[in-house]
Length: 636
Image (cartoon, rainbow, N blue to C red; front, side, top):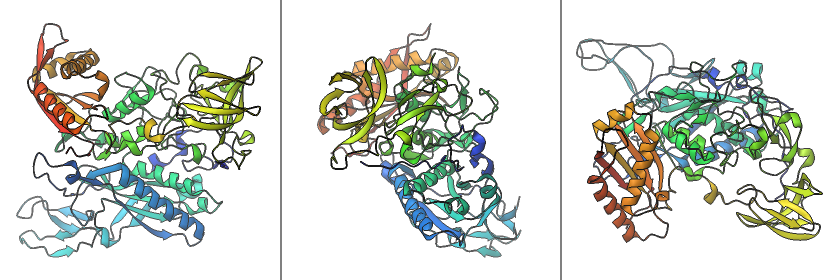
């Protein structure tokens, strides 16, 4: 693999030829997003019966993009690269995200009714239109929506049941469920801030899900130089994730659902932890964070960026629309990224989309996110920066391998409000430039070697044997090395890299919030607890023990290891219920799987457990909902 890595500046759309500490003001999404946008009625297909499959309720997120209003000076190669990137982004979301099925063709509601009747036979119907066209608008940027994407609108007199004027519906788009209007227009945002791209949503449906958005690809930026195709992809991907849900004004509109038709907005969005980091604490997001970092804290949610000048977070501080640049380094949704080869569309960002309540997410599509993996709840806040394997102290000017081991990195600060830094890519000491091109099965990667009691980073030719075993060429001799161990090769000590840093199988290493779609036979379970238990939980400070003891009791009664019970979330919201997934061994036959489902149903319907609250002896499970094979691989 011979890759030439080029520094492009920061992803979030401000170009710098030298990497500098970043602050939230560099990203303009929060500046261009409008808090209140038109909300329309969108009719969803209804379930016909309790046993209807998920595939009949949900459909892939199909983004229909319409490129218009392109600056005439935009080079043809830029337009071509943009079109290719959009196709790839659309394919990614089709494979990874599903939404509730809507009727065909897909149309968005018109919002230019100026006034509605407040009484009479035409109560709540439009009485007067606004002048002018229908806009998709973000701050200081408007786009006229073509009529073919708009639903009909009828205007009525006070006494007649028949409309006196009708704006006809356009043909719409079959199987679409989101419209993205793409322009390439030089605006003040582009010229004053040297922005690459910016966008936001401009329409919501009755569930507050964004159904249309506007994205401006600034022509002045993309005309400056030739970028790799991956750069266009990441710029567009980042902005569309904002538009779909990762946006400050949408957090309060997220849905927490006890069923598909019984949803409410969250009572609590974020929590400031003991280190002053504001964390989004939506349940799906917390589960993904806990899994990745190996932390069991109940409110270990997604860490948000802190604006420069604010210092530590406070309860009253404004949310931001990006992950913390250091704690989530290399994620697609940090406010900047070092370069495209290091960007990851991570499972934690996908968990944020799942937390909206609008989407079902296939987490197996996530790319492998290596940074901070398994580092625990105190990652980034241990006694010394060096106590975390992926962090360093900038004041020491240390050298070590960068996160992908492509170069011998230099320790540099990421943000001014955090004392730790990371080993940023340093192309003056690249391990990829001098690779032997005739040895195509080999890669030259950075590893730490010890000579005469001094550990230094070196570029060595590497050969993968498996995900946790590899060989290095040292002084013309190949030597084997296992993950996180040390190996002696020709009187040189090799500090073998950790799992996933060199030889990885993404299908095995990506942390999945659910069992794999189409591969594991998963049983999703929801347990509803009695009202008395709900009231006691509200008053208790021992909720975690309650959840743990309940799961242990379930595992014992089902005669299976508690390790096969995953993704457990206790929700105290309009009642108390526990969601978890049983992931049986992969070699379990369909007959045994069916028997396990039946056993689980019988057990939960007749169960009571030892209660952890003082003065109470047991609680009853009031009802259960069991969905066999939630991962959509059919049980025959």
